Length: 282
Ligand SMILES: [Cu+2]
Image (tube, rainbow, N blue to C red; front, side, top):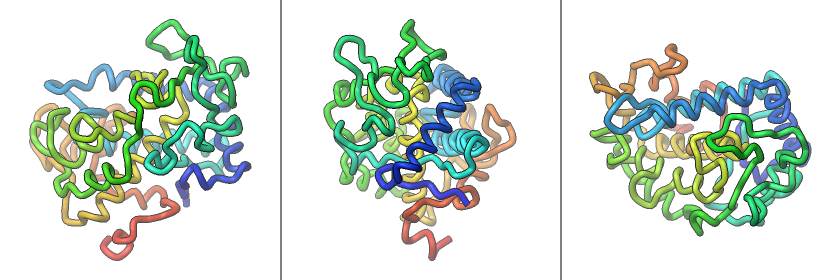
């Protein structure tokens, strides 16, 4: 059974296994197909039209399925690997071990934002950014420059307290848990983290930065935490909503998976720290 761990608790061997599996997916071209898929949805998801991956209720089940597919690809390289999660309420500075040279490497240099250390620095020859929205083919970051502070635990807790999953008009103007977590409304959680990292993470080709997976693994965990807090609150909308993925509608690009299939993460993996209420209530 896959166990997703807090990145801060990984051993040096686990960090090496994870980064090596990423480099192998990159070498074979498999990695870049995930970047392409994500950018396609960023481009096509709109508030007034069809929306699946973002700014809609299916933001959470879509990314759960997307991460599952990516994790399966990692595990085909090394069966011991799972996607770690980055709790950015706790590891919230540029000095976090996350950004050390033995893991993701640090922020970009002042001149051009280029990441200069770690396994994903351009100079290694192993991490060329090929799916891109501008001419630059090196991984870039500007940690803490686009926005000064990552979200706090108190800001996360206030969003986890919201009892309704999502609300009409089911887009970036909605109230409710999903849109406050996604960040188009309120304190801004998920979106702000993309901006804090900067570089490719602040664009539609954000999966070019491996931290994408660890950020989304934490967003995914917050969905599980929310479910444990609100066991009577269902995914919404239930049915019959134009342009939006209802509970039992299939999601592109897979077309064989629905939000209902994604509700219980424990069919697929466990977290190192499962939400307490979940064990007794589900
Ligand atoms: Cu994201």
